[in-house]
Picture 1 (cartoon, helix red, strand yellow):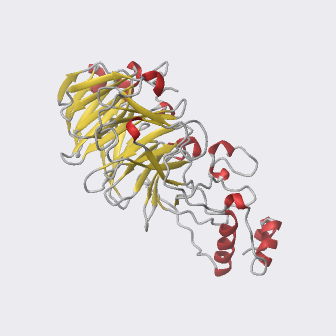
Picture 2 (cartoon, rainbow, N blue to C red):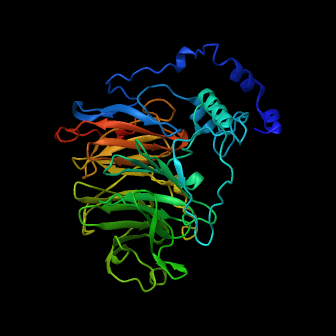
Picture 3 (tube, rainbow, N blue to C red):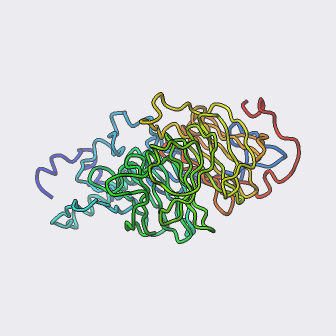
Length: 441
């Protein structure tokens, strides 16, 4: 370590380095982890028919899954502007950049040729490694989640998170977690949605480039979907879903008010919506007219396709051939931007998912609650409120329900993903549903 480096090292950390082996460290009792009881008493939880939702844990901003109710206030995004944290990665300002806080993921740099990463020439000394380990012990691992907005789970149980604020997609697993990096000179510019196929290949919608990028399960780039020479087929794709059984990709091109159905090689099979001839070019495939206005969310469940039609404040339920089987109104859908041809704000998208019995979950980013509906639109209940505690959210923009009826909530402005277990029989009973007035209380 250079002499100048020692000068930059915080005095408090240097003293701690000296005495850490001799003086035991105790933490405040409020930071001691406590197990979460198996309870359904979530904030503002109104669930029909005696069924409920159990809190399982949270993927914290450092990428670790925790089953405790400890809330690390340093991970809350609202504190990024405080003097102790840098805005980019929430590294404590007193920790110099040359110190490695051991993030829980490797980085797939993902450069667009001919650009390439420049590897460091020197390795790290044993003394520097010891120093980094000690500082990581004191401050914790470097934050990797900034504002997660979309989430899916693959067949291996890995959680995939789109994090557009840092232009990255995280793949978090037990052994090999990694980040597909985006930004200037990289293939990926601005991830807005993610999906996985039956082979766990990763599909990422890039709303800036108007493309879908496909990666192997280990993060290696495979191909583009929607690239026609120097032009893109899509204007701004904002939502993806894959029917893993049939191998069909469903894509929302929000500012064009279109739903595309493609095979996994990118061939267009159908277009649904109100197409504009100049906007779709020479694209092939069947066209199904439908009054879609700024659609922003899509999900597949129970052999049906569900779409959030934000401009119409409506949910469309379709079969997998894109024929409408039901639709209903929802409250307070975010309004489209004033110029919907040029501005798509991923922050205003609503979360959407479908459970094992076909019930539909819609997250509202404005009042941070999740509403639950039957497919005919009758409300079953709701839970959540604005905040940073268990079952509280700040801009819950992404939902995913896996094959075990676990609900994953991308809690964007809290920089985390919360996980809940849905009752397997939730909604299966046919008692009277809650009224819309009850749902909004």
